[in-house]
Each structure stands twice: as C-alpha cells, then as structure tokens.
Image 1 (tube, rainbow, N blue to C red):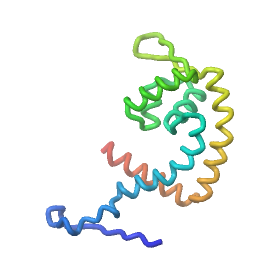
Image 2: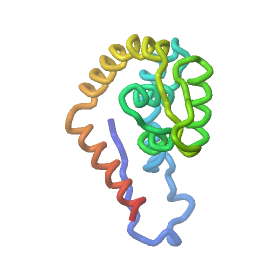
Image 3: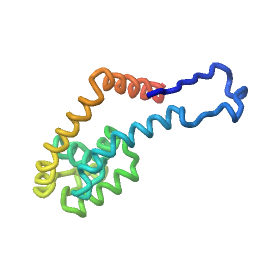
Image 4: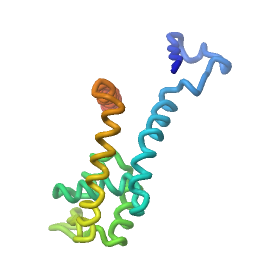
Length: 157
C-alpha cells in the first residue's frame, strides 16, 4: 500500500487551491482509521441496541464510582452525547441515576439487568479487543498512544 505524505514548509498563503489534496489530510486519515476500527466493535454490540459510547459508559459505571462529568471527560464525550446516552441507558433499565449529596452530584449505578448485559458482552468485547490489538501490533499501538499524547499536549499548550 502506498501512502503519500506531503509537508508544506511554506506559509499557507503561498499554497494554491490546486495543491490541496484532501485525501492526504491528517484529519481524513484519522476519520478513516476510526471507521475501520469502529466497525467491528459496532457490529458486535449492535444486537444489544448499544452504541460504542454507551458501552464504554456502562463499563465505567460498573468499575468505579464516578460521576457523569468525569465519565464524559475520560471518554472524550461531549455533554450532549453523554446526556443522550445516559437517558437511553436509564430508559432501557441498565443504569439508575440518583441524586447525590448535593444537586451537582448524581450517583450512577448499574442495575442487575445492566450487569447481566455487561457479563454477556465483556467476553466478546475482550476477544475482539485482543484480535484487533494483535492485528495492529504492539509497535503500532504504541505509535497511536504517541500520536494521541502529542495531540493532547498540543491542545493543552
């Protein structure tokens, strides 16, 4: 497979429209990687009526006492996605939300139905994760971590 990489050292004002090649855009590459990586996971959880973000939220609620804002931050979910997913998870009977000590804190608890769901999905998810990790390889996974850390540092600078 051939991948063209073109870097421009000249200022953007010197680049003409004809030189722009969106198929080589870093963002386009990341979106493509996301689609390629996400598809097997989505296919695995589709029969359960879940999306990937919902499953990640359920796993986090099952493993730790954490609030909605912390989950959104750790999973890099915007508040609208988080809120929409929480409503759906509660409506489907997989979680319970109760008020905490003050109005700013909501206690999130997995229901028995939610725990049964995760116990069924977890081995399938683990197998898929293992297969995907093996296919990608340790070196490439480390490169992804490096890219992610670089971008996070760039945005925090």
